[in-house]
Length: 82
Image (cartoon, rainbow, N blue to C red):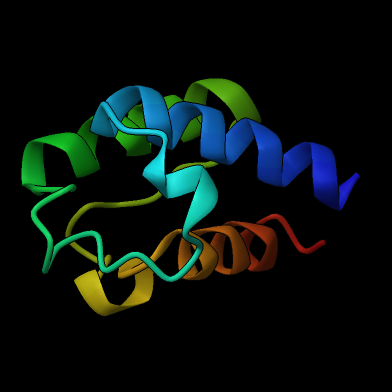
């Protein structure tokens, strides 16, 4: 389950960011490297809601929480209680 979840998250992330580097580098600094920005973050939040029924308020999300693909996966797993 966790591997399938990670694959789905990374699929959406790669699609929204426009790079497969998010799949190959789990510690990629998404915001520092300007791979993610506020618009892409909102797109990703919508994708997570559609895929998993998980609502994340953009107002409550701190960039540090989703700073890398690894941190995004961990946070989503935590929110889904996996």
